[in-house]
Length: 367
Image (cartoon, rainbow, N blue to C red):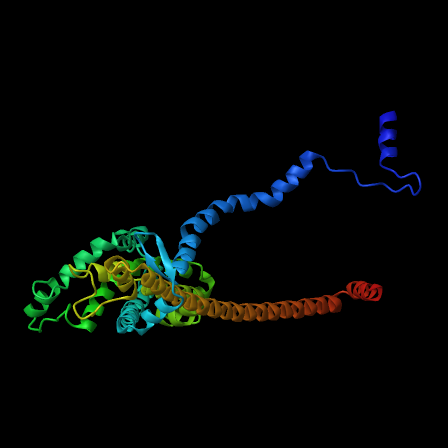
């Protein structure tokens, strides 16, 4: 009893009688620190590894891009933007940029269409769904070098499987390596083979997130499968399609394995028919041993990818904002309709029971 009174006196000021806050012990402070700091400690390994393997090489490449770098001495002379000016003044850069975007368009557009169609078929109630979903991912698991070697032999000018089949059908052979557009089609086919299944699974996951009630209501209204696909599936896939398009664009700008392994030399063709930006970067850095120019070219490519990422962020935010506004308006309409229905029920109850109307009147008067 005495100890209790002493503790109460110790926590009460004699003049005002107000209780003073008791100091937290070390255990409580440690618990508070653990609650605040533990989430950052859990995610810190990723950011530490990213800083070492990602941010440091980017910053180091930026420094080298402003120098005439000597790999032997591991030092260089600062020359400013001369490396960037040299890269932009080279016709090879613009040829490589044209080839890169050409291969990207020839690969991403058919790839996206085929991925949407395959995902729509896999979203149906078919037998062995797990088997088919796993099968579309098999090309993605294959090594890019193996895919490039197989398809480069298939698209051989003289003894390739594709030209042999065309000649057996009475059609002329296609110069897959000497013609620029034909080589772009061949390389785009490799890209489509490898990445279509990956995008299919992403779109399939988005389709399975669409509420089934939409399709049931459309079926009751008499809409067929094709009408449901264009009226329900495609509008619901809009944010996912934006993500897939932008990631395909970034991957298309960084394409390297397929054009590198398309022939035995790996230089982009005798007339730069399928030379891409990353392939030219590799040739400048490790072929000509000019790492300053290669670093400048890498940073130009990085800025292009960054610009596309900014466009992705702008488009995604606008889509989410539009969908959020439509969702809020829909919820407000639902709330108003529920409120009107509740008022109607109260009015009907008031007409049927005088006591109910009197109680409602008393509640309104109390408010």
